[in-house]
Length: 291
Image 1 (cartoon, rainbow, N blue to C red):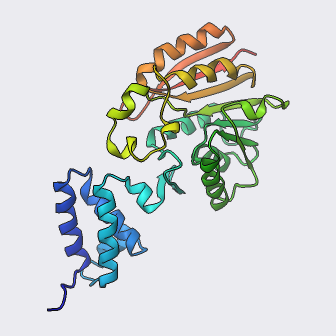
Image 2 (spheres, rainbow, N blue to C red; image 1 turned 30 degrees about the vertical axis):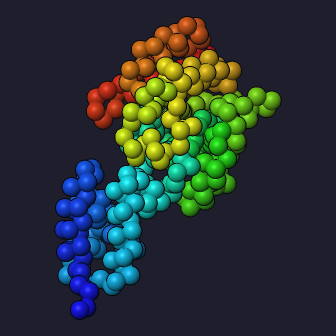
Image 3 (cartoon, helix red, strand yellow; image 1 turned 135 degrees about the horizontal axis):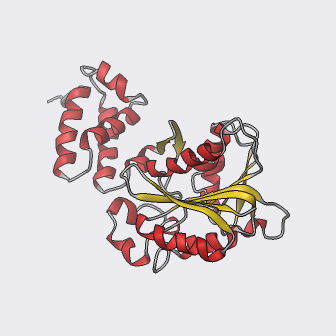
């Protein structure tokens, strides 16, 4: 007996049922993304070719992708891509998957510094896949962009993303812990942005499998109270910010009040405020160094 020939629609329909049974979030979206990836096309083209029959190799390859997903591997790691700021970026298990909430950092920088306004250098601390530094380089044609990360493997991905987006000559990557690459260099910044690790150590193992089993722990673990890196950034940033420069930090909404107090205790910051995310939770702290 010849094996069944599957059409795109049939394979999607049965995959959605299977993913739903396995408790996978957004099963329809997941099935479409993975099949589009297998066929090297996009989701729109899938809908335009619902009745297209698939080869045995295409079906077999797709089943392998589905198996990876039901093992709770993130879809982004399976496809190797994540969209951010309307661009596709390469990701793998060496970098945190960029979240939509981090786009708020870019929105706020654009509010503070309109794209046609010249400013001094900008620093992205803990750049990971490089999305913040790269997106800001695309928005600001004349600003020097620096980005650091403690993981060289993460920087390798960031550098590839910068090259893909045509800003590799404008974004300077450096390996080191937070400000460490600049401690012996006469450089300071008008803008510092950071999405540091901020999950408490005790909560890490309670996260969904997609996060705790696949995303890099070093990019998640913020210490016992989740503020280990945030506190270091707040205290040390004053040494690297130009007068009237701004710092913007993403964090757990539960940490924003304490972080504001940490800024106030430094006695060199003003205009300290919290910004809400798309769920109307405080997500970003902004502060300006006193001139």
